[in-house]
Length: 153
Image (cartoon, rainbow, N blue to C red; front, side, top):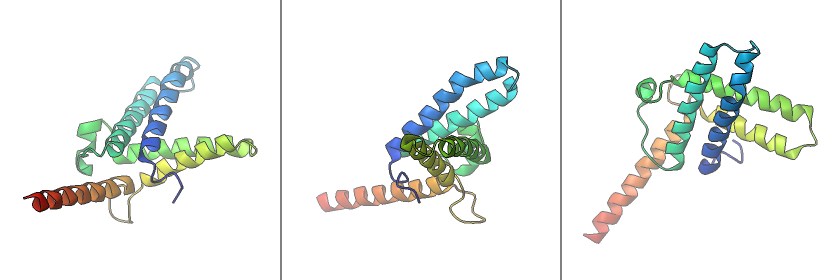
């Protein structure tokens, strides 16, 4: 996994940045006829779901079960995966076009990390790796908190 995989606040900020890029670029792409309003709306909905997901992960808040994602965030997990795959491909192309620019390479690596973490944690299991690891982390936090309460009693 990437050196960025454990930097949850950074990944949340990266998701916010990816959303801001799209919000800034889509009106021009729509006006130029390169993107339909419907596709832009669907992409923004998926990107907003990614932001909400990563903000919750970074802040150690609970997330809904995977089957409730669409109801909570307005996008299905496969839409989030597709959005991040597209972003990872685009940033990788930009980095490859300018191999001397370390910032572009780091950015591409971080976006690729977001994309990889959105894939199922194992084949045949629908929960994305980021949610699986987040739930384990939440369970450990609760167990530790419960242990502390028992010690204090």
